[in-house]
Length: 187
Image (cartoon, rainbow, N blue to C red; front, side, top):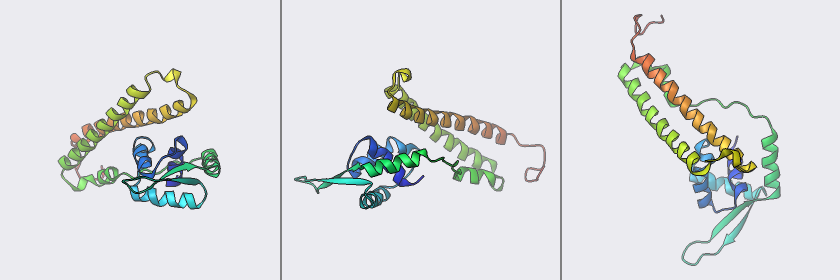
């Protein structure tokens, strides 16, 4: 997936300015696709040049003019075509897993502290997802088709965080007990 797809996905929901796009991004696809403000603005310009977006300039009195971006018919077709193509499993890029793989090089407490730190972050993310579910998806069986897709994306986030916490607890328990074999050996 490219940033273009994430931006089109947000803008197909509702036209908005680059600033508002960033805010909406953070509250939706930003949970699973990270980007910077600068990257969003660069991509908006490219998408407009390619005819996938159109911008309406809005004059403001005490502020610089702003552009409201909306997805063109070509942009919607581009996004729809991308959705119909099979996706490959994305490789995990996780600093913690690399640290854990070589964790035997540092005192055990260091890795356990890092795991505890990550566990706390995932616990906070789970709480945020559960709050979204409580505030916006109390009756999943009554959701519109569009909202059902949003809900299933949220459910993935909830289940991901729950499984991460389960794994983290397992790792902390397993690594917290020293093996009777050579601590640095291959046994």
